[in-house]
Image (cartoon, rainbow, N blue to C red; front, top):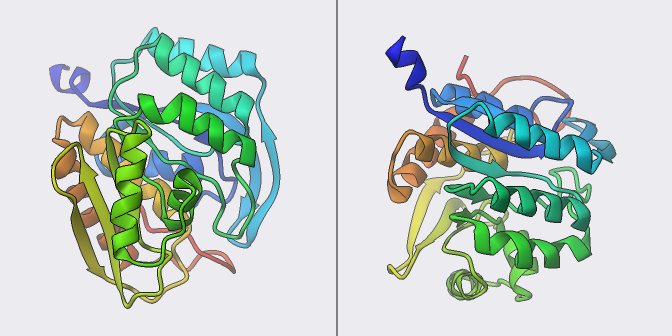
Length: 266
């Protein structure tokens, strides 16, 4: 029984994906694959599949608060991540609960636009996220378009990425990963800036596939899982990239659009 009680527990705060490839479903599958038990606080419901998002319904404040209360009265949460939060009101609700329950090891994935182009964070909510959530986060994981919006700076090259990472730290982000998957480079690259240490680049060969729905959710969830297991941030980032590279190479032939990842490597 001791081994069962020692099983690491994590939390995802996000919206769902009825198609199962991104959002909370991707978070839970990833954490399970990384041998971490995932609890969850559902912030909103989406109707979507591999072709796109059809509808979004943010949940009422009361049920969100109740979910936080239920999770923290029973579970020993070692690390937490956020996903789609939809609007200013919900960003603030989540921020208040993070403070209330003294949540540490918070990985902030500033989900703004779905793979198919649907908006998952309103423009005014971006300012709320910068003010309310970034200072609370242990790590933020924007992709290139998200990093541009958060920093109000256009990214044209790798030097710009390094500058933007430092700007995000100046805005209160303790540690930053800027994901380069939206670039047109032949190879994949992410830039990592941990505290005051020199930044460094992570490179991987780009795999030509459209089955990449939920890659951002999956990476941030894997990092969260490894933090919950007591890994250092640098090691958690490395292991999460290793996991993501592994599952992208084993695609599932599911759906008619941007297909889901093979989280369990079936």
